[in-house]
Length: 80
Image (tube, rainbow, N blue to C red):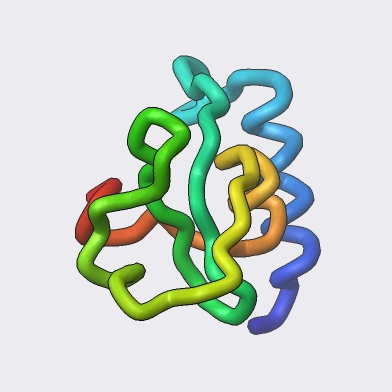
């Protein structure tokens, strides 16, 4: 996508300075797969009930802000 890096930088800037839709953003832990494009809800630090992660292995816990910085989007099932 043209200007992808610029868009990601502007999104991070808006989140850090709590501008626009990011004004009430609170960071939280999420689960990601090594090659996925989405991040998933972490339930009480014990994993996720998301149907998209049933067969997934090598899951990692990261902050939502880090996931957004990587260009990931919230899962439409567990965070949508």
